[in-house]
Structure formats: C-alpha cells, structure tokens
Image 1 (cartoon, rainbow, N blue to C red):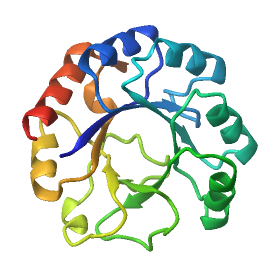
Image 2: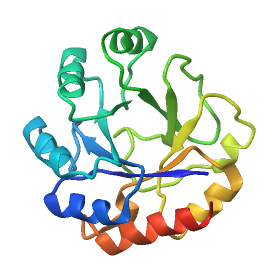
Image 3: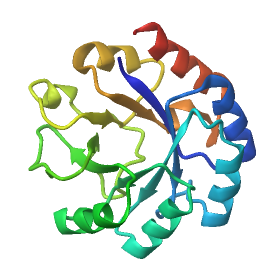
Length: 201
C-alpha cells in the first residue's frame, strides 16, 4: 500500500487543498528553491494542517542546529535530507531528535552506494539542483532493490503514478510539480493524484 506525499507547499490555499485530499505527508522546503519558505511561514502553515497529515522538512546541507530547532518546535514530523549529508551528520540528528530521517538518493540508470542509517530513502532523479526537476529516472534501476523502505520522486503525476506503483510498490510516492498549474499547487490535481493512489490499494 503506497502512501502519498505532496511536496513544496507554500500558501494557505495549499494547506486547504491537502486538508481536503488528505495525503499521508506534505513537504515544506527549507532549501534553496522556488518553493522555499521560511520558518515563520512553515509554522503558520503547520498550525492550519490537518493533524492526520505528517509534515516533512526538506533540507540541503543545512546547519544541524537549524534542523533541530525546526523539528523540536513541532513544525515538522520528519526530516528529509537532499544534500551531501553523510552518516555522521545523520547520526548527530538522530542523537538529538526523534523525527524519522529520510535521505534522498539521486538515480540515473543505476543505484549509487546507499547510506545505511536513515529510516527511509527517497529515490529521485539525479540533478545538480538536488531534485525538483519534474523528470523521471529509469525505474528499472529499483526493480531488484530490497533495502530500507523508500519514497519515490521525480516527474510523478496522475499520468504515471499507477505505472510505478504497480512496478515497484514504493512505501510512498512523492509529487510536487506534477500537481501544479502555472507553478502553483492545483487543488484538483492534488485530489486526483491522491484518489488515484488510494484506488490502487
């Protein structure tokens, strides 16, 4: 049973949309990106979020103290690392915080060496901008993978989510640009994506 994560929420309207659709997770981006938000905005949005939905904070090579401040304030429930964070970095987070850690791994046509310490992996399309490309990678690279449970991102939408779930059964499918129109989250696309995944269960 694959779960759903809607990433890159920035506005009150985005929260209203997910509160209706009820994905399992949403993502707040604290890393350089057109979807980046500050801590004050994230705190306000989290207060409006349905408590059944878990909030994920997305970071790239962030100071660990900043991550811990955001996590310990209750703004996020999970920590997603999209940079060069090594196992020592992950260990320091886990020693000081109970939030599960997701580590992103960029994939081209084969799996690179994988970290062992995170609670979950996130397989995304390899790119210089650390994800958010709206492009898929070769899903066959994961066909034989049997390790840590994983989120799957990279160019997902209502047009291809069913295909990848049937092929790989990831723990969670993670979508951002695939549920946007003109650069903003589209409530109809969010609902369509969530309902499509739910029907596959």
